[in-house]
Amino acid sequence: MLDGPEILYVDRARSLRRGQRTSDLGLAPGSRLPAYATAIGKLLLANLPEREQGEILASMKLTKRGPLVDALTPHLVSTADRISARLGYRRDDES
Image (cartoon, rainbow, N blue to C red; front, side, top):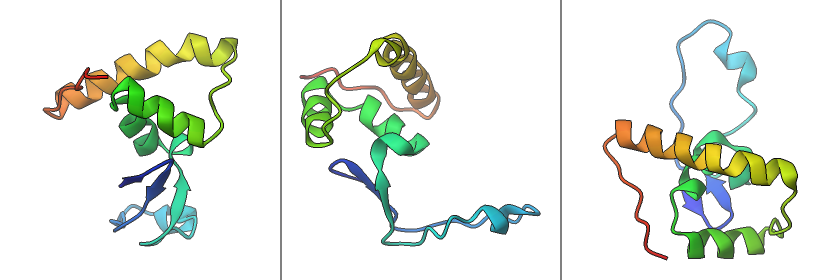
């Protein structure tokens, strides 16, 4: 779940695939990671209205953007939109 600038793990589904336990990373309910550092966090951030994105990025002190971020942001947003559409969600463009 997105909690401000962080992802808060409220539950965790374990995989039955071989070797999956070795890449556990010690994440359990209650664990927190920066939203920008996780796939689900990036997806959730990309689907927020721009005003909310700006507030969260400002709280993380990530408002300074470089050429790589400027080049990748549109691709991240469009990929997140496609994933969301396949899951039946639509981005709310209200700012």
